[in-house]
Length: 342
Ligand SMILES: NC(=O)c1ccc[n+]([C@@H]2O[C@H](COP(=O)([O-])OP(=O)(O)OC[C@H]3O[C@@H](n4cnc5c(N)ncnc54)[C@H](O)[C@@H]3O)[C@@H](O)[C@H]2O)c1
Image (cartoon, rainbow, N blue to C red; front, side):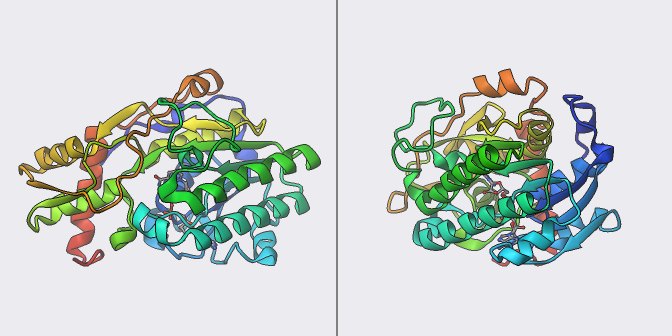
């Protein structure tokens, strides 16, 4: 699918041609779009990823334009090596899965996400990096957070209950960033993305995120589409390509370590989303609601006031319809190749 040229959207506050950039997690879903965006902006890009959930296939079209290093960022020396020789770091690498897997793996999510953030920030200190973007998450917010949710402080309540270990990991990432910013003077930007969707998502069975899971269920046409919980849950969706754009703009302009929500203002109910995917492929899916499964938060919706004030250049460039068509096209192409199993 051809999307509008995001390169024309810039704050004009940063010269990418002078940048030697590291993207951790650059072989992942959002990371691969970011790599593309940065190359188009003129940066030299190194991708660091252990390929535990990402894939080099996401980077095949830019493989001759990037440096790729496979290593595990939970290891301190490896993380320092990853950053050596670079002056700008985007830290996206994470253990980030759908809620069924997440609820059963709080320990690993907390351990790996905290270790990676700590090692990356320490590497930035050692190598005197001039700018860093740390990717947090909307999962830092309490289940009872106000809707729409503004940039609440990370010590309020507990993180989202179905992603608690992951949410604590992201809260600690923000606190680690604050200390690195205050103590070492490293300019740091923190973003809190809401729900990403789009082509290049690697489906991981029950560990998948909600939107890709629903797309796969509708496209597989294996009987009724099972939606966990009531189906009335509302999610705030943004195409991964627009998250990448938001990450670049945040790095260009807001390196004061104050977190900013990132979303496009497109909210949708999950049962409506299933019907919309069906419409796009010309079927009317039968939905079955599995009330035994966790519902997650009833409504996730970002308050975008701060985003508008701090990064006024940011806008959603991919509509929900185009984004879903992109996901459908990508799924069809890759499932023919047998990439996703049943
Ligand atoms: N996808 C979403 O809806 C969403 C929402 C909020 C925040 N985020 C955050 O955005 C970032 C990107 O998310 P994504 O959806 O692209 O996830 P992803 O799983 O596709 O990408 C993460 C990448 O990190 C790599 N990685 C994991 N552990 C590693 C390790 N120990 N060493 C090196 N690399 C490692 C994986 O192989 C993968 O390529 C993450 O920080 C995630 O927490 C995502």
